[in-house]
Image (cartoon, rainbow, N blue to C red; front, top):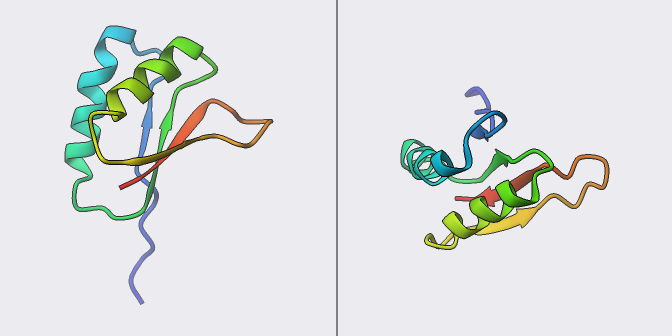
Length: 79
């Protein structure tokens, strides 16, 4: 049996807001052959989450903010 691939994850902790769109574009490009859920860690910043969601709106990607009340600082996308 093949090894199970880890979910691609982009951690935006410590990243300046203005750099986020380019990093998301690069992340999606680098994982373009991956099919399944991926994680974008936003932290608990409302502004960071909005920047991520706005950037993702340019793509046909299903996205879901965390429903886990104990860990709300990430967005799951399905690529």
